[in-house]
Image (cartoon, rainbow, N blue to C red; front, side, top):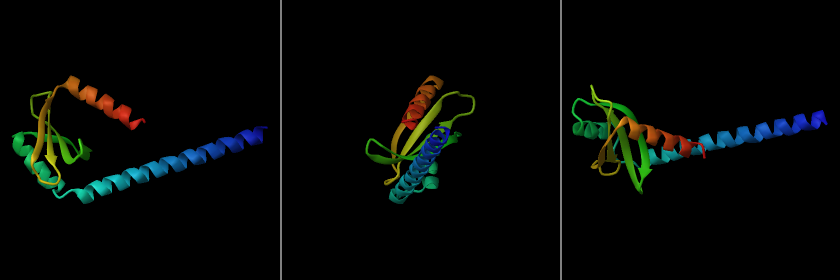
Length: 120
């Protein structure tokens, strides 16, 4: 009985490891596909985003599909402020798609939503 339980446990671990590896590979392919679709480089998009927030510093950057559009999304922090300005640049045209100020409370909610999305 003990050997059977050990075999089942090991088989389950191998299956889970395989699923995790396959999931990671799929995420890499998706990121590579997004990069291939983008006509605007990250550097070009950063320049455009920082022009909207003079003296800002990029805290985080991400290439993602949002509302059917491929965008570069930048979280830009300003010295002396706890707020973040999120600037989205269309990754195909290079135009500003959106500019939004986020308070620490907004940022916490967004982080929690991202965590919940990632755990599914």
